[in-house]
Length: 466
Image 1 (cartoon, one colour):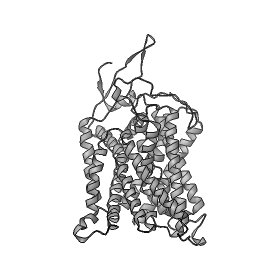
Image 2 (cartoon, one colour):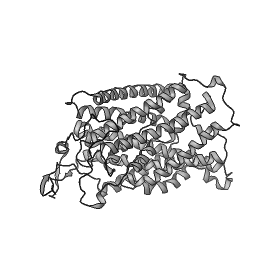
Image 3 (cartoon, helix red, strand yellow):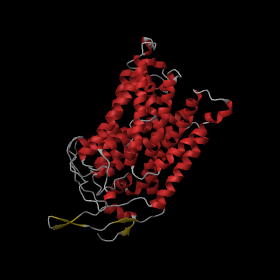
């Protein structure tokens, strides 16, 4: 292997090869070729993620506190239309993941990211794309800490804390305590390392699903009057609940990491991860949303957990939700750190290193491999950016208890961009010289859909602000 030579960002944009190694005519779960068959020089560099571990991480990224707002979201539009919106949102998000995975297949090696795809399509805008992703993930990380601060005092309140131990009811105390568990997880370099914590988090989701099903089937639970159940009902809360549907399946910030870390990242395997992650999340949203709405009708609160009696079952449920968001924090810190690093590369004009052509012996012949963009965050950057994310999210979370408006703007811009606009934009640009087919049409439609969603959500947020 020859020595590395530094290149600037313009040269890097040209060295990331656009290689049509996969057929875009293949269906979502169709068989595709693999980009994982090249040998790795060191065993520790070899990807280890499986389809199961990747599905667990993606599903944990998708399923968060917003799951418990789904019944009230369905109440704002009616049972039939609400269930349909869950399906539409799942399909749109799945399509965005599929298009991003297709774009990743054009990056030689295992270095796909929003930054490398931006360099292939819109090099001058790469910094803005990474900045939007960093802000989005940063804001969601803060919201997770706020959820911990809101729920843990309620959990401890069930035990009847005496005045001498009032600190146990302080939200800042519990945010600080749980940060001690979050910090080591946030310092893990590989997303696949979080598969076990993600599994624990999804176990908490399963427990909360059991709570919803139990109360729906409980004969002692009074049923709502028939007039409180509507198949279609566009109430005044529709615009405020609409983003819950739109952003329910957002996990696109981690799809490139999943692609890079999969042991076999062929089309078939990557698409299986997308299909099973979106499918499982779709079932969870349908169960919680539909059964929660049928249990309480139009009067269901924004958080379904608050509708149940404050007993031991609900207390355990609240604690399970705390565990869920605690283990979800690192899944937001990981892409946030990567995007901030890319932004710093541009701001400080950091030279990246790209290996020269490599020689590999196969069947007695020497084949020249395509030039690959190989980049990994340096130890200095890693141990500088990670503490900054942790400390800043912690300080904001203990200082502010309501971030609804800020997160509404972040969601309507950052989430919309990475889920719908950028997938459609990237795919259309990379395949602009290809014949029009169903995938190109779908990419264009997804882009237009994203622009429409951003316009509606931003307009409502601005109207609500003033």
